[in-house]
Length: 104
Picture 1 (cartoon, rainbow, N blue to C red):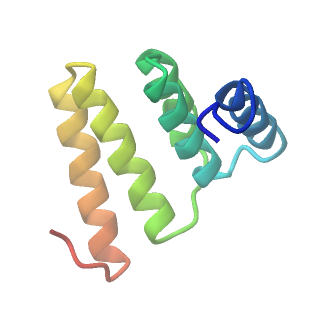
Picture 2: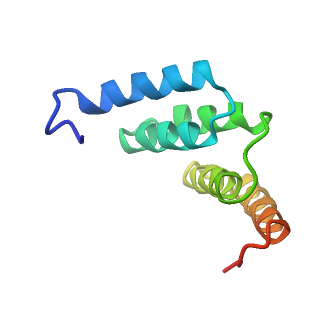
């Protein structure tokens, strides 16, 4: 969408993702997508908050869980919180191994 095809496309997408999360707080994919959109528009604090709110919710095992943690780690690093970045990356790696995923 990128705001090219639909005027205010990003804002519409953000509103829709918020609605998805309100209806289903367990949606890790919606949380990651919303966080990425918020970060892209320069609101890193809001992006981190969306993911941190999802940390306490169970996530589907496998790739969605690992990508959730990696995204949160990346945003924490961008915010200058190396300790949180390292902790989330360590957890993502441990979970990836537990799911039988290759770790790079």
